[in-house]
Length: 275
Image (cartoon, rainbow, N blue to C red):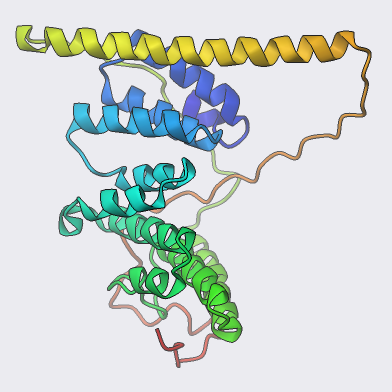
């Protein structure tokens, strides 16, 4: 349910995620979902805490980029860079490695170091003439850094490539905003070994603390709303604009690399801007 709601109503998605960790605090995907929804509503401290729990339970580094970005969100770009350097990038899947490079580049920008931010993006996956699932975000990140460096023409070219890459991938894979996906929201209960009992109890207590903290924040917010209503203050509510559905990520890493360049038909020049 959280996955279905996160684009349309991230706050409601987060509430569903909190309910899930209340029931299954030791299930890695439950903690991961809580982290992602917390990040979506801007609660970076909670996102970071849940991501650490997810990493401890699962033993995986696939969400390291989100951890780095969460450190940035709480105002610690130095810690973000330190965290990003602590993992073996070669062991990461390619999409996760690219996401980490983008997050590290952002942390360098936070520190006012655009040249280093550009260097973070100089990775083998930066291919200006081919479209991979990670290409639009990587091209857009490079455009942002180039703009910070005052290289506006190059920035505009990379931004154009980001747009074209997204369009080419959508066309090649036939993805559409009208596609519907059924997401089953269920948690499998796992039998724990005796050695896991102590860790399970700690995770359960942590999950209860997270839910209680979120409940307190919601109650405080609702109290503030009620107080404002009683004061007689009225305002015309503007209709909310539903967020555009996010482009569906491609399961395969790339369009066939042996094929001709995907940008030929899009009118891109053969000469890529110098990195």
